[in-house]
Image (cartoon, rainbow, N blue to C red; front, side):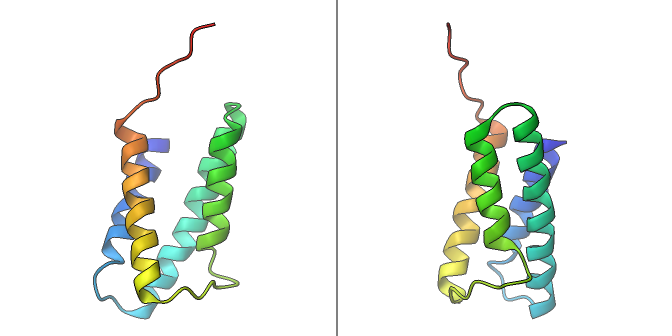
Length: 99
């Protein structure tokens, strides 16, 4: 489930790089909030505090209620970095530490 959410969000963020109607960006922000909130909850349940904090921060960044005005170019950079980060987290698994 986590991987599906990450891939869907990454695709949506990459689509934001194209010239889309304003309503599309609003829906992406809402899906971003919901997706990152789910990922944060699941990370918390698994005891991954660092991931939970990152996902909470991203949920706050993408939430549609109190918009953060960064400008089109900055948002494109944010969308690209977050999309790439989500895809990397799907395909690159961290090594387990040995204790």
